[in-house]
Length: 58
Image (cartoon, rainbow, N blue to C red; front, side, top):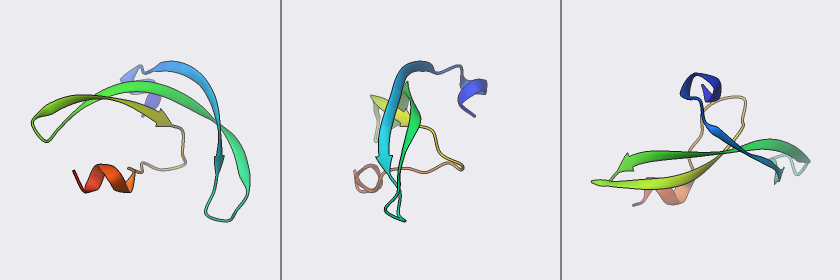
């Protein structure tokens, strides 16, 4: 998905997984339309698409 959207790579980010383990994952920049506005967002690589809980409640 990241490749098909041609997202701009920002580098790598250390993340903590639900298991408590930490991993370095690719970090990218994207924009999305949500709630009638355009937002700039950071995208962290994952095995499947996920969204942050704060985004769901806007």
